[in-house]
Length: 112
Image 1: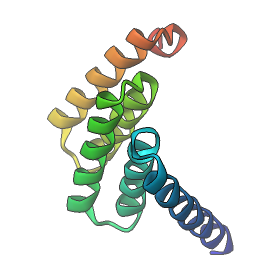
Image 2: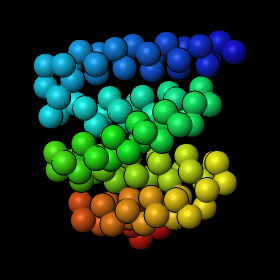
Image 3: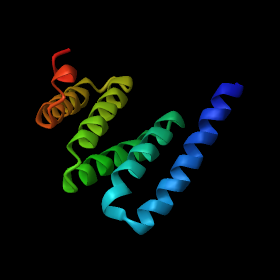
């Protein structure tokens, strides 16, 4: 569909830009790049690479103290695992997302 093609092109363009920015400032952009990569892999049904990229996004967000981005990466990883029927990992990622959102102070998000 045309709408899908537009989103795919936007995602690919954003990934290319993030790749460039990551090259000049890995500390600030690596987690964002890996999260976008994970979402792309998930959309392309490449589950093994998606798992790896979600974990890298979470790791770098945590390592670089981007609590809000760690929370988002955990939340999206949880939805990914839930879509695979992997309830145990989904619960673990949702729990970590909740903890990170709470630590960040996103109380409206954690009160849902």
